[in-house]
Length: 77
Image (tube, rainbow, N blue to C red; front, side):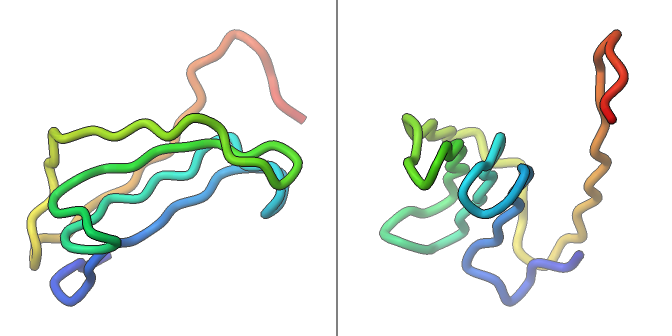
């Protein structure tokens, strides 16, 4: 993914749009935020407490690589 033209991007992980275990939203310059990562969760259409991270490892124009992984002794079906 190249992010040179983006103001932000979103990755949502969950059952559906009403149940998200992770809402991951790095913002270069969007919604009044600059170089900020916003994370949240949603259960039954209700957002949880927003987490805001100022450590911002992304750069405009630089490629990013997303490698999802599960680190758990349990098997998910």
